[in-house]
Length: 448
Ligand SMILES: CC(C)CCC[C@@H](C)[C@H]1CC[C@H]2[C@@H]3CC=C4C[C@@H](O)CC[C@]4(C)[C@H]3CC[C@]12C
Image (cartoon, protein in one colour):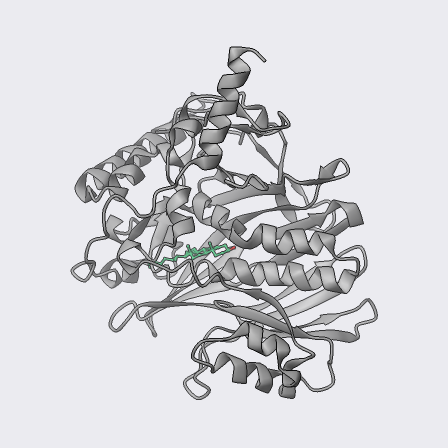
């Protein structure tokens, strides 16, 4: 072993043992003086991304980092999906993964920073069992693409892949003072060992009470997860809050086999837990029994497992109750704090993992963690952050002008390519070209 190897080993240990920060450098400021409505109401019939919303309504993360957050329960649920021997069971865990990814955004009443064109973000889980790479591939309209994979492999390919793109259309509803964000774009999970491809579209998000009262967000709508190989489907619905029923965040659904027969029922809360039963005879009885569980002050999952009234119930997913949200820190959790931390191993050098497969750092200059405006905002330097944000947007506009006048070549994303989806008919998507992890950043643009 030469000294370089030893150094690598030490660096890797440092990465693995790195104690991530447990809060942000500064608490968020009081927003009550900044009316968001006075700005939003000018945006009727226009796409909201064309308007500058005061920076105090932002959270110190970019949309790319928000997408990386969807990974929080991936090793629990996608690993499990990949391990199941029955396709119906696999579908259950892919569905639970979608629900778990919604839970992460609960209570996050701020707008993430709009990524600059060419901005990237990578996150390798500290346990090193998955990695994700995101890129802002279009500016107007804003499109963020992401690709993630398990770094555990089954034979030669990763155990699972999860990728897609998001274009958040924001629509304003003047009458009830709400904003609706409709994410366009197809999301895919692949389980290579079973040669299965699952796709779906994300739920929309409604922001209520923008004028008076307490701002709150709600995910609603219906979606279908399709296993294209076996034609198995899961239909999932997030119910809007209704004053009459007074139920929040309810999520219900069912799984259909290839002959369109219901083979399983799902019910739960997208911010808390998801239950399932194979007894499809009486959905209303199933819903009632789960409602009883949800009504408990503190759900005792251990007790439920042993209770014979619930013997047919399967708990597919529950939120990690220990990871509490910090109200003074934009409702971030401990997991969220990690996302924008720029620790030395990410900055300085290449570190290889035990099998010399995964290199950790250095980051390209386009990584969201290097965004100066977000860094200032995180420290509570609001005015400086706002000026920097303005400077970056101006810089981006200048490049755009030069592109339009032909002075500069048209920008092509570096790590993703737009094409037709290989499995879902007629859908356009962005596919990862698998070159990012070679860490050759020569072509990275200067955006910050
Ligand atoms: C008026 C202001 C405060 C409105 C802010 C709207 C914000 C909260 C909206 C706009 C776009 C939305 C995002 C659109 C798409 C996705 C992808 C999905 O997989 C998880 C939710 C997520 C990440 C949404 C989270 C909430 C979101 C960021």
